[in-house]
Length: 130
Image 1: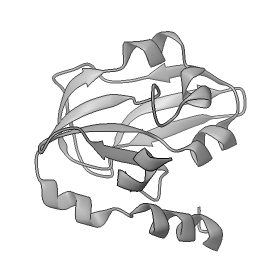
Image 2: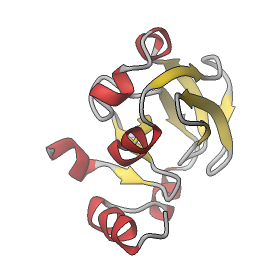
Image 3: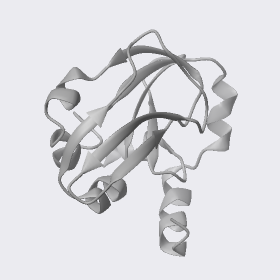
Image 4: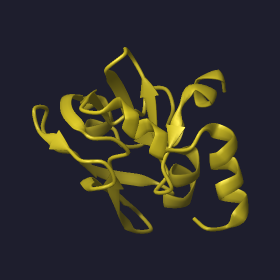
C-alpha cells in the first residue's frame, strides 16, 4: 500500500508513479481494474510516441466493455509494459506493481499538480463522481 501513497491519480482512474525526477510509470487503479472485470486485451502505443495530459493513448478491453486510457501527464513514451500486453490479467492481479502500462519521460512536471493524491482520490471515489 505504500506505493499508492506516493502516486498521483486522475479522475479517469489512471495513476502516475515517479521513477526518477523526469520519468514516471502510468497504470490504471484497482478501482478501474475491479470495475472492468476480466481484462482480455490491451492496446498501447509504441515507445517513442508522445502522450498529452488527459488525452487518449490506448484502450483496454474486458469481458464487460472497451474503455479508453487517458494519459495523466504529457511526455514521450520511453517504454511499454510488454508483459501486460501479452498477459492482460496482470492488471487484475497487480495493478500497482507489475501492472504498469507505460513509462513516460515527462514534458512538464508541473502537470502533476492537476492530479490527486491518494486521500483526494479516495474522497473522489466516495463522492460517486466516478
